[in-house]
Image (cartoon, rainbow, N blue to C red; front, top):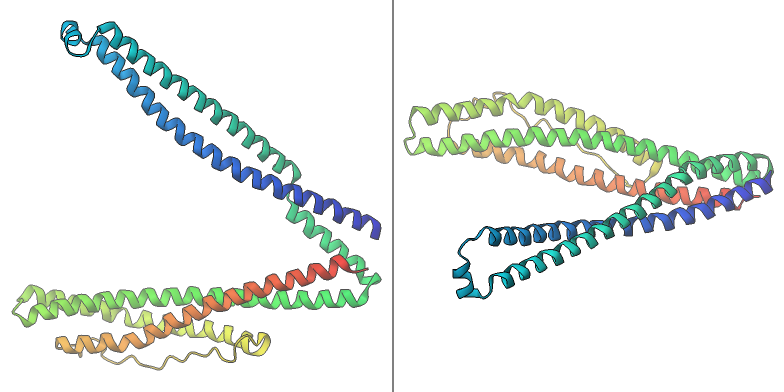
Length: 315
């Protein structure tokens, strides 16, 4: 069994190396084919231009004028035909190179497909080897299982981080809608101060009402966001110990009669500034979530390398 698994591993490694070589060749061919495609396009335009020039001369009836100005008519025609022929030859050569390149690319692609899913085959082998060492190398098996548990915990953490980040994106979207309404209201309020009239007043109140309408959705979004952050915090503090604290407390900074107190331009500005603090808190926390996910992803890769090393080198 051990010999069979070892032979399978060596065969998989050989094919993985071959697959890597094919993928590099495929990438190089893709770039080369793209180069030929662009060259063909350029030469097609050049070829079309040369033949248009020939057709234009052949339709031109003032031969005498041409002979006087630019020389013999037949010489001019011959020169244009030669240039058109040369352009056609260059185009054909480029098209030939492109076809050859695409055939090579297709051949490499087929060879890659014939090898199959190397990652899946390697994963299957790892599982089989892990089962085999359960009886042949108990210490290695227990160590590998310990790493597997850590990976599961990290996967759960990443899932919670992604959910929290999605909630934060929604919070910022609601904030942005509110800021836009307040900014518009501020502009109309400024216009009112200089005698804007009934239209600007109506528009100002419309924007103020739009901002008020976002108050309840923002409260809800922030509450949901805090719940998601608390889930992440529990994992990080109690299990992973990645950071000492990941708390975020949103005080009840909103206010009854949120919009109805907006009587003057100054009030609009004050409320806009009031919203800036929690807005910046959310942006800062979003950046922290991105950082924590990156750390968790890196740790997952490290654990996977450790796991594979244990399985491969175990008895």
